[in-house]
Length: 145
Image (cartoon, rainbow, N blue to C red):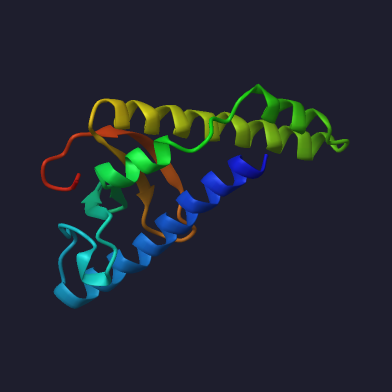
């Protein structure tokens, strides 16, 4: 369970940082697309905003960061066993949901690393930031080494 929460916390924190970086870049340049987050010191990421009527952004993890994430221990069936130990049905349902999402993200990360691509996460820009989806990407412009 701890690994699941660490993975989701890392992704949530990263998306939160990128929302701030995107807002700062847009305010400074007046544009809706930025070619990366290097201006904020976040060189392991690429950011592309302005999709779906300027409501979403794409966050690209670098290939090297994607490979590092792929080396994290797998989230297995034992995590589901940890959820079963919870007595409150609402907590148990939330735990199962987290396990499913975490396993899906981890599978995507491993696929991206195996095919030398990067993890791409699409999120809505407005608060609260909602992750719309994730998949491997080979974008030459935003998926850096």
